[in-house]
Each structure stands twice: as structure tokens, then as C-alpha cells.
Amino acid sequence: MLFNSISFLCFFPIVVLIYFLIPKKARYLWLLFASYYFYMSQNPGFALLLLFTTVITYASGLMLSALSRKRKPEADCLKKWVVFGSVFANLGILFLCKYIPFHLLVPVGISFYTFQALSYTIDVYREKTASEKNFFRYALYVSFFPTILSGPIQRAADFLPQLQTLAQKKLWDEKRIANGLFFMLWGYFLKLVLADRIAVFVNAAYADYENLGSGILVLAAVLYAFQIYCDFAGYSCIAIGAGTVMGFELMRNFDAPYLAVSIKDFWRRWHISLSSYLRDYLYIPLGGNRKGQIRKYLNLLLTFLASGMWHGAGLHFVFWGGLHGVYQILGDLLRKSLPQKMTQSSHFALKLLRVVRTFLLTSFAWIFFRADSLQMAFAYIRRMIAAGGISQLFDGTLLGMGLDLYEWGILLAGLFVLILADILKNRGQELTERVMGKPLILRYIVALCLLAAVYVYGMYGPAYDAAQFIYFQF
Image (cartoon, rainbow, N blue to C red):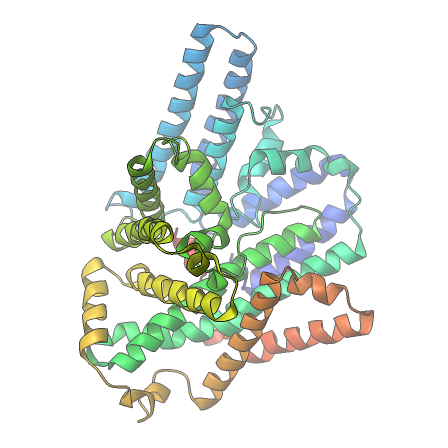
């Protein structure tokens, strides 16, 4: 069941209506049932792996909690073995599903819910969160339907207390519900009006890159950066908005990433739940920046290589992650070698230059992410450099790649709205909050305009066959 499918547009209102009407103590059980129904709609067999991860990490939490009360050297040793067993079992399943060739169908969302469940085990071990005694409540934490397929990856310390106090929450809050619905609507705009429209052109370019000129290939590389942003940020907005409607606060996943002034800054803004996860559970345990500069750079490289592997088994994903690690290392060396006024100046021209440089570097790296293989990525880059010429942008070739002049006009207008929204966000003014702070009539006008844009200009595919979100494959 995809967020942009008719089935979800029927499923979500029914779930919310029943959630609001049933007895308070039954709310989490209803959400657990709805979450498993939602996940099993992808493939009923996937639920067995989800249940396996849930049982293993739940039991690990209880054992760690029991051992913590003993406070003996033997107990500390046993705790490490419990964590090792939980990590080994869950990463083992993840590895078998994603990296062994005979698996034709990878369970959707397995990378997300596995990382989320393992963070619970590790946080209980570190005593950053208490173990959850209620199995069904814990199962909902792992399987919560807005986040299970593509995050944001929730921390137990943030989400489990919300479940534990669910019976005391005031569910009907008109302002909160309106804010959540508007956030969902913004997510649908990003996905259906922008991401899926860009995909038409980008897919055509990558399918026939050997016969295209530099101008179109550069444009496709740049637009893919916007496609993956709109696609994934769109999913995150829908997930966060759905959670908000039901009274949950979910982690924000994007913060105007293409306005970052460095690659380091980009990763503070892009897929925040994953980048912060890798920082806390991999980079810092490896030693972070506490063991000298060489070790720091090695830790950075290992962390980004792991990020690439998390996205997929292909070498092009690993190369993409490694490239970002190299970017970070070179960026750190550059900051130390250049005058501080050049690297930290708030002068508009210098800041704009850093933003453009960072965007171009990330757009180049996305070529490896988008390509079907490492060989294809290098072939695409060679063609992009060697083909030369921009004549295909004007001789009709561009308009013959799925989008006519009218469609390009819609796309450019939509990108203008996105960039404007991100500029506001970069200044600390979230678009949703800004709109919700306006008079009621203006809020309705903005919401209706956005709804009309999604309905009229959304790309729904043949016979309304919803296009899958990019990050579902991870």
C-alpha cells in the first residue's frame, strides 16, 4: 500500500476515525493491527521477518534490563553478548535479504525497521532508555505504519513515551490536525507534482544516455538531485503529517539540504534520522574525532561506506557513500588550510558560492546513486564530459523526452515554490507553521491551491498506478 495510492487514501481516514472513537486504552492495539495490515498489504510473508526482529529485540531489552539490576562483572559480560546476539541476528537477516543474489524480492522497509529496532537494543544497553515491558506497545514502535517503509527512523527514547501516555492524550486538536493534514498535502505536492514529473525526463535520459549530448545529461543529473529530494522528502512529510494527525511527534528528516554550505552541512540536513543514527551508533563508537586526525578521517570514510552499503549491495552505492566520505575529508582539510573569513564568511556572494559548490558536488555524486551499476555511472560521466554541445536542449530533443513545453512550465513553477519554501525554512520559518499562523480564510485558500495543484498537475501514471517512492527499495 503506497502513500500515493487510492487504497491508502481510503485506509488512513478509516484508521484515524476508529482511532478517535475507540476506548483510550485500546488505541495502541488498534494502531498495531492497522500497522501490520498496512505492512502485510505489500506482501503477507514480510510480516514474519518483521515479527522476528520485534521478538528478538524485545527479548533482548528485557534481558538487558534484568542483567542491569545485578551490577556484577559477569552481568556486564552477558549484556555485551545479548547485544551482540541481537545485532548479529538482525543484521544477518538484513544481509541475507539485501545482499544474497537468490533473493528476488527484498522486504520493503527492512533496512529502516531493523535499524530502528537495533537502536532500542543498544539504547537499553547504554541505559539511555528503559526496556518496554508491554510487547504489543513495543511491536507498535517497530511497525508504526507511517514510518515503517521509509522512516524517519525513530529513537525509542522519543517514541515509546508517546505510546505509554497515549491513553492520556487529547486527540481532538483542530490546529494540530490541520497542521498534520497540510504537511501531508505538501508531501503529496513534492511527490506527485515534482518528483514523478522529473522522473519522466530523468528516466528517459538515463535509458538513452549513450545517444544524448552533454547539455541534456548535465540537466538530467541536476534534476535527479531534485527528484530524489522531492520523492524522499515528500514521503517523510506524509509520514510526519500522518503521525501529527494522530497526536505523535516524529523526527524531522530534511532541513533545506540544497542550501547547505558544505558537504558536512548537507549531511546535517539530509536524511537526518539516518545520518544522526550512523553518527551515534557507528561513527562515535568507532572513536569519532577523539583519536587523532587520521583515525577521524578513517572513521568518516567507514561510516559513509556503511551508508552506501545500507542503501544497496551494488558497488555504485558503496562508491556513492565513499565519495561523500572523501568529500568530508577534503572539506575538513580545506577548512584548515584556507583563511577563516573565506570558509565561514556570511557575505552573500561567498555563501552563495559555497551553496552552489555543495549542490554541484552532491549532484555529481547522485549519478552513482541513480545509475544501475558502477560501470554505467562512469560511462554516463564520460559521455557527459565528451559529448559536448547544448544544441539538444533547443532542437526539439528535450521536448521529445516525455515532457512537453507545458509540462516543463509546471515543473519550473513547482521548483520555484520548493526553493522558496526551503529559503523560508533556512531562515527558521517552516512553510507549514507560516501558513497555519495566517487567518483562517488565507489558510483555506493556500490549502485549496495546493490541493488543486496536486489534483490537476499530479503525475498519477497509467490508470492511476501509483509510482513507488524511491526509498522503498532500501
